[in-house]
Amino acid sequence: MAEPQAEFAIRVRDLVVGFGRQTVLDHLSLDVRRGEILGLVGASGGGKSVLMRTIIGLIPRRSGTIEVMGQSIGGMHDRSTASTWGILFQQGALFSSLTVRQNVQFPLRENLTLSQELMDEIAIAKLEMVGLRAEDADKYPSELSGGMTKRVALARALALDPPILFLDEPTSGLDPIAAGDFDALIRTLQKTLGLTVFMVTHDLASLTTVCDRVAALADGKIVAVGPIRELLKSEHPWVRAYFHGKRSQMLQTQMR
Amino acid sequence: MNSEPLLLATPSGDKLELRPEGPWIAANVATLEMLSRSVGVNVSQSTAVTLDMSGISALDTLGAWVLEKLSRQAASSGRPAVITGVAEHFSGLLEEVRQVNRHTPALTAAPNPVLLRLNDLGKATIGAREDVAIFLQMLGSLFMALIGVVRRPRSLRLTSLVYQLYRIGFQAIPIVALITFLIGAIIAQQGFFHFRRFGAESYTVDMVGILVLRELGVLIVAIMVAGRSGSAYTAELGSMKMREEIDALSTMGLGPVDVLILPRVAALVIALPILAFIGSIAALYGGGLVAQFYGDMGPAIYIARLHEAVSVTHFKVGILKAPFMALVIGIVACSEGLRVKGSAESLGRQTTTSVVKSIFLVIVLDGLFAIFFASIGM
Image (cartoon, rainbow over all chains, first blue to last red; front, side, top):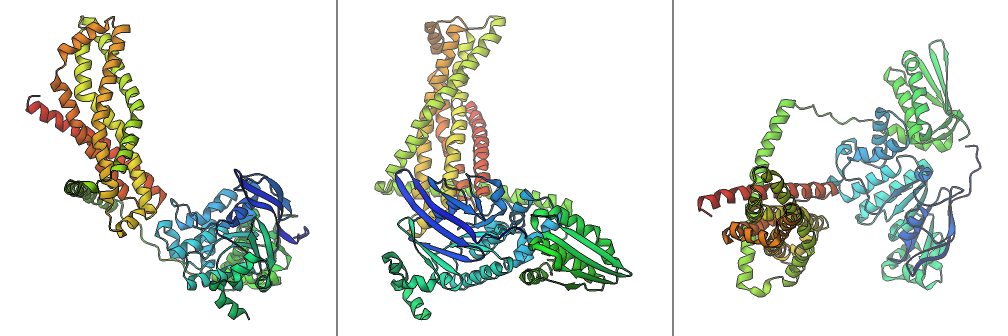
């Protein structure tokens, strides 16, 4: 592309988000570099999903700026952003009245003009890229297992080949093998499609294996950001508690 | 995007060199499809096809797939395309796309339409039998739960029962009273208008009294309750089923019938006669107002006529039907709620089925009662 490539895919500056009297995000700033996988960790209910939803415009912000691919994001329902990002919601959020094939085709049908034949081929291509078979295309979401739902949701998120992919707890509810497969899949797709991935996760294994950088959210701010090795050395009390708790100790021994 | 995608085709003898240029991305899909179709004939006629990818400025899955299709088209006529000049950062994507759509699932043959109809008919017949079975099963388990409550009165969910009574009984009073009031007024107006022609205006009161007390009061109220509370029951139980709350109850050793369904159905059975009574009175009041302002018949005469025309039997006939109608509405609403499957669509379908089925059954039941009361001379 001839246009200059911005270094950052997402730039968040001084973001304030709150509900009623409660302030969830308090002057938060975060940069996501182009082509990296950024993992976001934080306490449950600490505003990780709020940050993601604010960036994609589902929650209004009180102040601050958000730039995505060098363009400032305005209010909600900015249609031009639909092909900028794909979103994998925690529960998949597949449309339950449509088949798997129709779910994947939905963004294509709404945003582009193309023949049914090509649309079918693209849908199957996407499904095969996320590791599903063409036979699964005519199933309904209620007939899918948890792992398959996530894969279909990923295929739908990738339908328009967006440069940015948001993942909200992609491996929650999957067994370690399926979660590992899913991590590998995200890594492969990120390499082949050149994606920028913003991943909200609690899965320590995902953080160490696929994330290029990890950002820690505590008290409404990003308290630490960097490769996982740097975060493990961080002195911030919450980050220490997160990475040096009992559950993380096994991981620690592996990392050394 | 700085430019439109292009596809330069250079035929030299039997050979064909294709040179895609510009951004081959999803946003330009209409152009891409047109381009690939325009060279389609040339590709299948040439003996050797070369694809020179060096001119591509941007590529995504969709563009890569269109190119892959061209190369497969060449391969299918026996001469695989030679691909050159692939930029390094596109090679992974092209390689990935090469793997997909290789295998087409076996097509299931379209079934015979006549057989399909017969199949549907058979399924509907068996489904109807199943409906009856489910209805009877629910009636039976409600009865068992009731026996349990009679044996151990403290096992009755009193809080739940009172809450349901408040919700479907007390909160329904304004709307039930308003609608039956209007129905009563309309019947009275029609009576005065048509009976006036042969001077039988005073019989309007007989008509309003008998019609409202015997049939309309309870029927209208039952239909409203089926729409208002039956649908709410189905949706509530359905979403509880979807969120596995009912499974959670069962694992704690509590049956959904005892905890959820008995209080709801009992509340309906208690509330519907009361609502039917209130509705009948509101309808008679509506009729009385019309009599005064439209039929020139004062309240004293209206009440006197009503006294002559209506006996306690008429009231009994009406109000006796109410608990049975409530039972039917409750059973249908709750069993449809428990039949909800995982999807949001199924919840909507089951709620519709619940309302339609319970209104239908209420009317059928009303007909059966009419025959019954006629034969015992009430």
